[in-house]
Length: 240
Image (cartoon, rainbow, N blue to C red; front, side, top):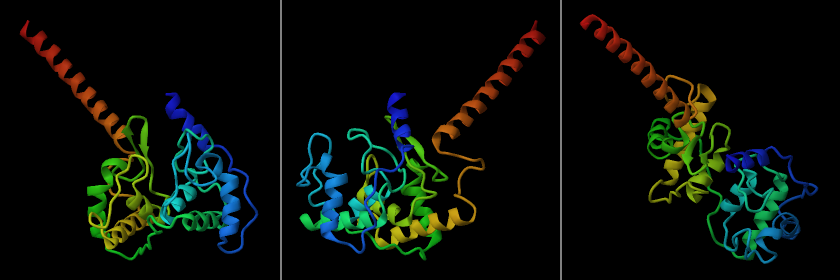
């Protein structure tokens, strides 16, 4: 229970102190921001340490995803917090991305995203690849071991595309052989279309994934068991 509650409480903390707005994308300003917000865990040389991995060679998509979701900077080094929104200003995030990717270039770039794709194809891909964890309505769901697949109803489409490519936390990564750039465009198009109009297709009840849906199943099973018991008792009385 503590393992579940601590990240939730940490997510409610106010944003960390921020640098003044940084004009443009400056590697020098990014180094200053990195030393202030990141170096205590990832090291001044980006090689990591006891509380955080090396981020040498991390691509722009990886740095952008962890910073724009607010998972980083971490409130407590050894506890990963879910999506709580960016804790730093957009110019500061851009400058940190510029600095980190300049130290050792490589990794995934931020994927371009086009939301004018094929909705029907995106729906099919979502149901096949995303729904088992994120739920029928993409509101998030428990996936075991105190892990939770987050809701997608407010996630920017760029974050969704980044997550598909990176596979953060327990999520598998999907390379271009599994999901092409047009496939990713179709998925984010479906998500954008559904949440803008009427919510996600799913069960004919408001759903947050397998937990409430499973609860409905147990309730239905309980009702059936009660009726079966009543019928059994009634039959017994008639037989006597």
